[in-house]
Image 1 (cartoon, rainbow, N blue to C red):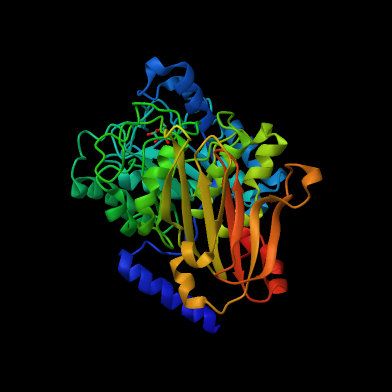
Image 2: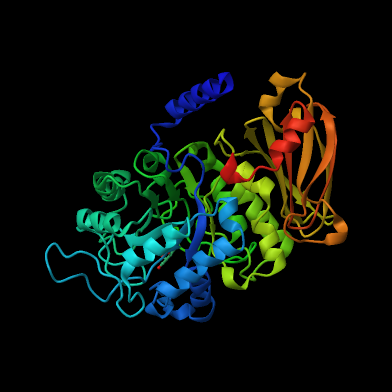
Amino acid sequence: MKSRRLLLGLSLVLQAAMGVAKDDGLARTPPMGWVGLSFLVEFKHSTLTTLVPSWNFFACDITQDTILKAAQALVDTGLKDLGYEYVIMDDCWHAPARSSRRPHPPVADPIRFPDGIKALADKIHALGLKIGIYSSAGTKTCAGQFGSLGYEEIDAKTYAEWGIDYLKYDNCYNEGQAGYDLVSYNRYAKMSRALSDTGRPILYSLCNWGEDHTWNWAPTIAHTWRMSGDIMDSYDAYDDRCPCESMIDCKLPGFHCSMTRILEYAAPLVQKAGAGQWNDLDMLEVGNGGMTTDEYKTHFAMWAVIKSPLILGNDLTKMDEVTKAIITNKWLIKINQDRVALPVNRVRKSIIKNPHGEVTGNVQVWSGPLKDGAVVAIVNTTPEKYMMRYQLVDVYPQAKKTTSNRYSVLDAWALTNPSLGIVEGNWGRSLGESFDVTTLIPLEIPAHGVSVHLWQVGDPDRASSQHVLHGAEL
Ligand code: GAL
């Protein structure tokens, strides 16, 4: 009880420092779920690049069936029990036009959604899941469907009547209503108010790609906000369509942003996140085929520890064993959903050179608090494995105050039983049970890989029994 009060106090102090959060309990920890579009977007990007950026209707083939199959797969694969609860329809659920009857409510495509969204929502709720929908704070969505600009009240009201639990609200066709923080804020605040006025709890996922310093004003009106252009399924491919070096004053967020590019963008912005207000690093690409296993492990781990929403973007009905093993890593989900609800910070970034003096990448150290300890994540972007040692006191500044603590340390990506290989439930090996903040921890991080260590204070038995809790049970 005492520690709860302490936690509450800590989070209030932090919120006061960060601004008033939209902490209405809907996103106390980052939302988890699946979105129905990303593999189609990637297909569109890779094969129909001449059509981009029109988000052309070629990708508009989501149906009630696709969405229901994904929902069923969340249940059947056990992902739901791990906390993946939102089933989100992205662009293209729309009929060719709104209803012609005033006040012109939105209408779903009658061919692809013959039973309507309400019936779909009922089915998804009956599976114990929640349903998300998509629109744009513009006259059209990015794929050219009708947008919500000027229709905020009727759209929010209709979504609530349909039983919607989550709205992803995009930025296309905004008619030039951007370029200044206040202009963007006003456009997005209108939908925030409209959603609140419905009285239905609807998680508001703002998607203006980090334009106009979203992180400065979104926390008071939305639960999550996209902070970059669209992710592409690549570890580090260069692409001028994602032109900004940093998001801080980026004038063209673009798309085709590699995973490590987004990680770089996120580093200075993590300070804006906390309970009820999360940087959204975009959907997860794990399982879509563009990265190696170690690269996907880095992708999943870093999204988890930075406290991005964990929104899967792969085809859940055709997952291989490795994909499933990565997205079900219970330690990383536990970190993502930890009650302290704060992201890791990057505390070190060392440039690595080869013997010829050429830069081959960098090694980044990220650390942050957990309810009963700390997490340390070390990223190696070089094409070679990297060996190092660290002490908690060096990489996690707060550890200085806890020099007498004893910790158990768990490696979240080590295989518990190496002979089983990469299969679900085979992650998380203890490195020791009585470490202190000065114990030297040796590490070997694979090329393009990551190491994640959970430092858990106190009695190791208690700590390890807590470790087996799923995100949803925290
Ligand atoms: C983009 C958005 C993507 C996807 C796409 C749909 O603007 O960032 O995540 O939703 O629109 O057309």
